[in-house]
Image (cartoon, rainbow, N blue to C red; front, side, top):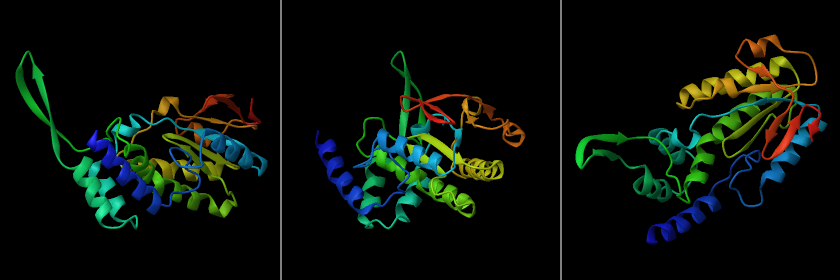
Length: 224
């Protein structure tokens, strides 16, 4: 109980000091699934009616503590907050495997966000925030104001041309490699009003006509 109270106090401080990309809609005050859907619709009205749908593998279990610690320290937070988070949930620890009362081995833990922790959602948002920044920079020359939107680990890339889509996809793959995150590639796809795109399909993306996004069916023509 005391840990949860302490996490609430730390969370309030992080939320007050943290400025996340406006295209992040998960676990933020004033943002919700409806905001995410409205942003996707606004992008469609401005011409970005094509989408790449991604699916992360064990998204919350994958962030490396060393990388997250670096991002926290570079985020402009008061120095005491990253230190508190590191000591609270990112410090070195071990898990023990016990079978029939016999301890077999200790497993060193160095990644993953704790399920049930009040801090985990905002820590995940901070971990992926530079991904969204990079995606926006990749798409800036195309005049696309809404190239990517994210709700928790649900990421959509919104694009106009195949070259723009390919540039963002390659950036995403490079970011995943640098940050030791993995996509479920067979579940990643794209939706378009036009013809099939061979360059995207060469990257392992398949054409899809509709996709259920945050409980609503998404097509290239909008939400059904």
